[in-house]
Length: 178
Image (cartoon, rainbow, N blue to C red; front, side):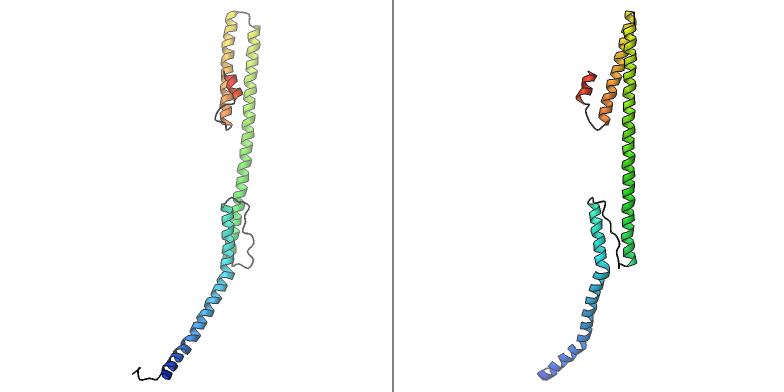
């Protein structure tokens, strides 16, 4: 039956099908373009900015912030604001921790200084007593006491040097130990 139809009739049949399908296809293309533009304009550009900020922050730029996302959907803007608040909190906590660590180091240095001064004072007092000692047994006992205090002092200096970040005591501390 189709073989008996003329080429004009077949052309007209194809044109009818094309006229029936063309408006929905055009409408589909228009919807696709509008959706693509809308997604880019109202979603992807903001998410791209947020992602870029996350990457900067993740690579060590702790000053990176999303900032105000004018025109963004409230949910997207909330995401940016939440990140900024989190980054600010981390920055404050880091600053507080660094300040506390600096104070702890300062107090530790002060404590070490006072301990060294106290040991030096004890050494001086025992040395003065040794000089004033009259008997050989008394001088010998004070000499042993002085050597023990000097050993404690040297051990403390070596210990202090190792807690200050050096794995070995300084050469001057080793010399005083010997």
